[in-house]
Amino acid sequence: MKKFLSVFLFSMLSFSSFGNHISGGEMFYQYMGPGSSPGTKLYKITLRLFRDNLGGGAAMPGGVYIGIFNNDNSQAIGGSPFTVNITSSVSVPVTPPPACMVNPPTLDYSMGSYEFTVQLSTNANGYTAAYQTCCRIFPLENVLTQNQPAQGEGSTYMCIIPGTNQLASGNNSSPQFITQLTRVCYKASFTFNFSAVDPDGDSLVYYYCNAYNRGNSTNSGNVNPSTPPFQSVSYINGYSGTSPLGSGSTLNHLTGIISGIAPQTSGRFVV
Image (cartoon, rainbow, N blue to C red; front, side, top):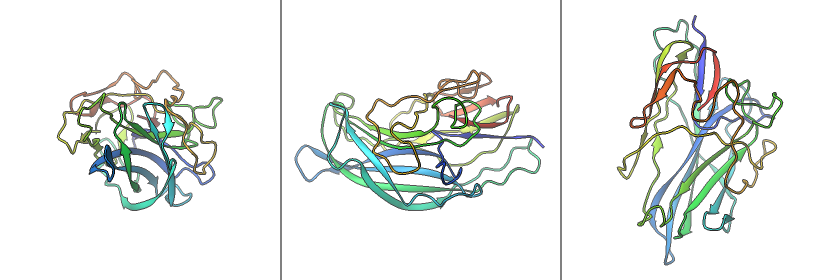
């Protein structure tokens, strides 16, 4: 049986006091129209968290704190952090196992969504929304975790709403990644579809970047996120934010598809 390679998109996380049950997430925004006051706009911000239903631990969090910062002055806006309750929880689809895998592992993940609408004043450099939590799952092959001698643990999920300096109209919604689970044999050829859909029909370009660490978070409780810019995790074993799976694979910048030869070591990787 080929060993299993787990690749988690974005920043992986877990709540240490609850067990390793949360394994990844993303945040995005949607323009909802003009606000009730002149010079304002409405945005719906969504955080998605992914739970390993077979890993034990607590249920999906019932609520989270999401901070919003004005990029003109790095100040948190009024009402931040916002307490956002879970909106829905659904199963994550799983693609068929590859031919190289005998007795493939069972995958059972759910996706919890946390949505809220906020009115923001038009500004020059836009806004950053963020959620932070402690403690990554472990062990990881490319990032330090809490059982290793450095502060590499924890996660920050964030999105940036552009201002007039980046987008004249400002009426923009962010892309949303296609959500699915894929099993991969280590040392074998593979293809991951990490593409996204843009509701505005914009042209998309894909690239790797560093995962962010936990910021202000020191335990599993909700925390007021630290002020941007956020700090990177510590990469190990020759991996980096721009090469999270090593030299054997490549990211197609036009399609969002990662393909090539999986790492020589089985385990979990942050992408």
